[in-house]
Length: 238
Ligand SMILES: Cc1ncc(COP(=O)(O)O)c(C=O)c1O
Image 1 (cartoon, rainbow, N blue to C red):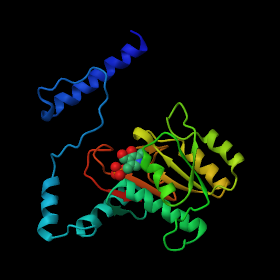
Image 2 (cartoon, protein in one colour):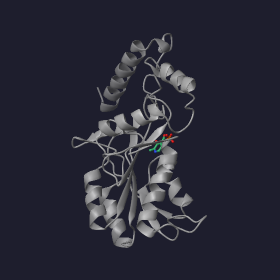
Image 3 (tube, rainbow, N blue to C red):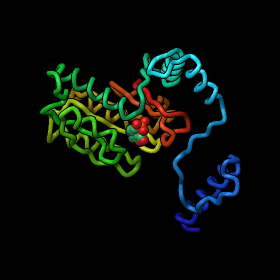
Image 4 (cartoon, rainbow, N blue to C red):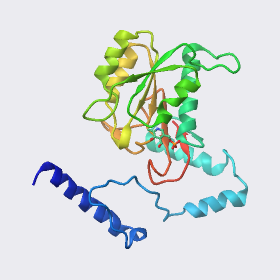
């Protein structure tokens, strides 16, 4: 069997197992080769806690349940603090804004914190990794992706610092639950006195050399969007 046929067979078996295990897929024939995004599976206490928020009138960005989720996720990932926002996109904007202020100072009202500055970023990712750089007036410089992890290439990053040694911020994503070579990227960042915003939106639960993704950045972001994992909408800056 060719390697492509072997892969197709593997996908077919794993998809079949998933469809058999979940009654919502009864009667639906899986594609032979397509890998689906994960869909949310609401079979726990989700509705109970949504009702609890309604009953207690905590329909906002605060409340005891949000405090508890922040505490639990910080413990799970292994960071001191986590802050819940409405989504990963807004968390990335906050993280990038804070990194810009730390590096370049607090800008005047209605100005961005990265005005006049280049920022290195992943070139293959969801656009929420990159958009906040431009919201803050910065100029994204796209760093090539490597073949083995499909994430930012440390070699390309090192080259980019040769061309633009003044850069002080790197925004790097871990795609599809596969961590990039974040220790090498951290070493390069430290060498050049740069901060890292780690976009771990797609990689909650994935570890790199035994350590959870979401712990490597100066600011790190995870997402609870159903297409990133099967929890509920909402997000954290860790
Ligand atoms: C790599 C990456 N970053 C950021 C986001 C944004 O997260 P959210 O959908 O929670 O806004 C996503 C979402 O799909 C993503 O895949």
